[in-house]
Image: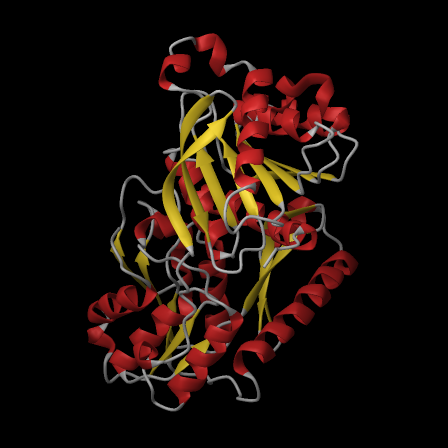
Length: 444
């Protein structure tokens, strides 16, 4: 990890921005995670702190493709080429903008309360986030700051993937980044503490900054409640014992059991990253080895979906008997062949699974069992993973339960491209959180 937390990142980023001290600067944090970072920068520079709330305008039939962005004060920035190529009419554009404008206004009121936004006209706008993944939101923020009258726009972040500057282009006059590591999967991998920043924390940051109190001195502005249980465990699955890692945040809304893909284990860095995102949202996680060391020597076992599904069901029964898990709903997260095992297991009448998520999965390997799955199922596939994407489209057509297929643009099978794993993890988090909470009935 490069940074302890966002406060540490903000302090270190502020040192790189000392040349702006004394200039007419306004520091703008991108909510939510960029605000604690921006708070430290603003305190170090003696500059006012504000949020810059932006909403991307997605093409109606392909919302992940941005055709523009909007900001407060009626600001709208359009990519005329995208609008023209997508054939978006004025009416369609107005509908999208009205929806996003309502959400933008709601968020601005939520974060800022009754305080008016800090005016940018003629000043240097320093746009700060906790890192760059795809860069699309940061770029939109720079465009909006410019449209709001900023004389100069500086984009400053603690970490970004190599070549990130090309993604921003001329929308910022100055680009500052502390680190551009080659092995970049997601922003959170470079923080020891990347717990989710809440709306309440953002509001507290802004309020305290207005009163002249630095972010690091804010009591009650962070919600870093440690997990009540975070440990290596030995999982019982029928006649075998398997290594696992169980994490239970305080007041967990449910627990997600991970089924890794072929050639992987409970130590999978991608699954561990997703688990961290879920933990930060109050969801417990269990990562475990599907096979013993001896069983892995026979490659046929790795693709024995029936066997893997049986292991998953055995482990689920073990989990429900653990202290703190009674009454908590259970979800499955499967990757590659593990997704087939998760769906096969979820189809069992006594599985009682609240939700299933497949990342880059092979649901086709579950065969006819797909039609028997009743748990809400989310299929996440990379946009450049052509073969698996086709298999998932066919699998979705076979599902009879609530289901959705989400395509992450620019991602290949392993979601190695910058920002793609983060997008997949956050999509999975959003799918799980409501469904697990609704199905949980904690005991005690």
